Length: 249
Length: 64
Image (cartoon, rainbow over all chains, first blue to last red; front, top):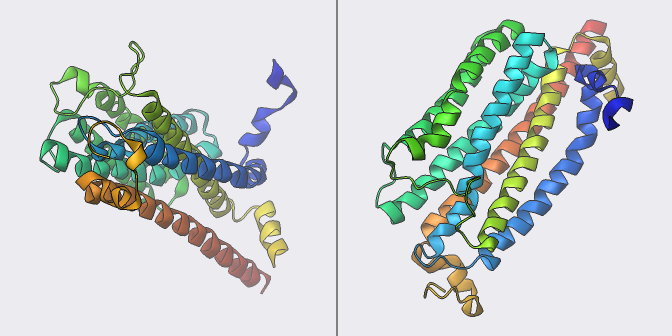
């Protein structure tokens, strides 16, 4: 195995992950900016006007990537929470709580842009359709996770409780994803599915994927930045954090 | 633009801002998204700054 030379467990300790994360942030953030610039160029200047929806469909270039990210981040967050509960690794719980705010942001963006698209296209800002309702539940799950964690003083107990909530809530994600198949929804079907060729122009698909990867890189940069704060906060009594604070003066 | 032919040749700045009559919806989407991203970035930068100040104060106090 190519990875055999590196001891990956070494980086699962907060003290050794802290500097690694710090070195990664500028690179990841730069890639996010570059992808966003190219993605926006494709979204507005390369992708053609839709013959049915006119220019309003350009909202999809943030709506779809944001919706994907909202579900993807939740699954990753629940995965870290599960790892934290099972193996009792300190870093996992910190990663889970660092993911939540950005996940909530993308969930809100998906709902907001959906409403702004829905008004001119469906004639309504909001309908109680299965897809929209389950996505709204996802936003409440993120908010619930963050509030629960903030409400409990002891950090270990806090991440255990909120972690459990995150794991239970993960059942909502496949329901969001398949809601358009299971129920007769106003919301249209999947934009990209595995069993058939994409129905949209390839430049539209390119724009959507570029924006998705831009959001993805943005998320990684945000999470790394936040987890570094989390590490400092929770390890503030340790030798290395004290030495680091000392050094900065 | 907006004639259904996907005519990019006629693209000008006024078309860009009006978005074929959907300007409010399109820019409302992109604008709010950009705003939230900027707020989140400022928020995490602030958090780190405040945290480091607090830790520095703590270490000064523990030294006495």
